[in-house]
Image (cartoon, one colour):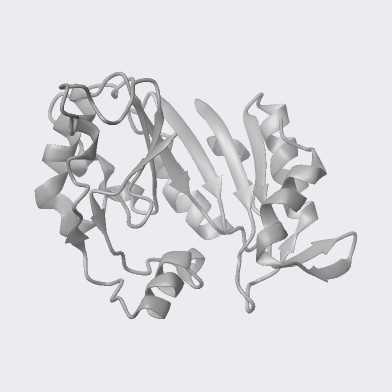
Length: 235
């Protein structure tokens, strides 16, 4: 796996952004997250070593723009160049998350067609309102590889109408001392929806405040992923 952040910075966009880890980390460092800037890693996928070989080795899954949103407006002038690099590196698979799925068609290259084989788009949702809005759009878009990320999940949701052509659904809770609780029943409900539609499911992270069988727990941040893994409910 590799990570590529051609730019950094983002704006809080919906309820799921309330305790955004990027904003929290930047605040501790005295960095203005709302300032969108290109990074010195902009050309990372096509950077070569002294022998002329790509430094980013073939066959990797590349997590794209995880300190921003690949579809954010301020990056419109830079994105075309990114698409060219993504096309050049057809030996890599690029995955990005977005809360701005309504901008998708105005942000893709002219030769997008039915989608690039090496691009995975993950649409993130946090509640039923955002699920219905974003997934209603997402389900109609020409994308070859689609994931849904329900993280942070802040209420019980029904995504079953939108699971056609979805490869993976990821669920996770919120990480913050003031985090909104994650109820395990919500997680199991989404898992049942995925099983019914034969869609892969991954429980990636518990919430700091976690409810199971009516009992409330407070978990350490370092344990959120390991506790989710111990549930052993991935499908």
